[in-house]
Length: 336
Image 1: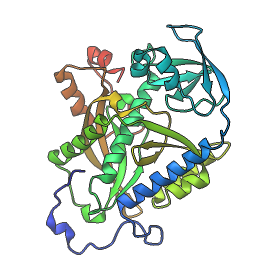
Image 2 (image 1 turned 90 degrees about the vertical axis):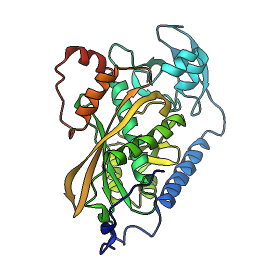
Image 3 (image 1 turned 30 degrees about the vertical axis):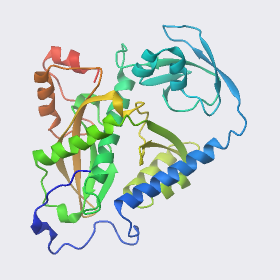
């Protein structure tokens, strides 16, 4: 990952870490990431073992092309992407989400029963759910980069990726940096370094794996992050079965706010635009790192992209919907 130059004066007189020592063992960021990845893989393997005998189910495709096509799939193993492979290369490359019996379904989430299926793309008449999934996925990529950006030199704690409206102009991730970095103000070069790391992940074409886990498993996975533990408990309390949805990107594991796109290669233009101080939480400085991205199949004129980047530098909130004055610009960006 990229390294970042920090004023030397921040090193002196700052030995206290911002997370209590009774919560976090002395593990490095890389060690914690490996532990989470290992626990995710273990739980995924356990869930797969629940299907020792292959059970066949019928999946009926109700889309515009090949209407009425029926696929014989494997319960607990086959996914919407498996069906897309049987349809065409176009379906594999363009399908962002699926509708399974009318419910939003991720492309790599296994089927649990016979059902009807259709696919959603960025070019649909109503792309709202696709847009939200894209924004959410881009925020997860950002979280992955931020957690690893300083390696083990400085501690980075991920707080959450707020669900901000697409029309707010930017997606974001809230983080807390090592308190030795409280006076550090990221430069354009620093933000560009983050952006370069993002594009490395995009070019790896990594899948967004999805896994629903029991709250006890989620608590074990995020035992080193009090903020994530709070989110886990909140998510579990909102689920009738006490389950929490997780996603994995490479060896990076995070809590889901909802469906994600299939792979990082669906991302095109992407730039980290700003880092705003939100104030203190439990005597810790929370920063909101913001970014902007467009799907690879949606291209804008460079002048419009630069205007969007300027807007993406402004602080976004979960309730803010920025008005776009230029109607032509609205038309071009409403499918972001």
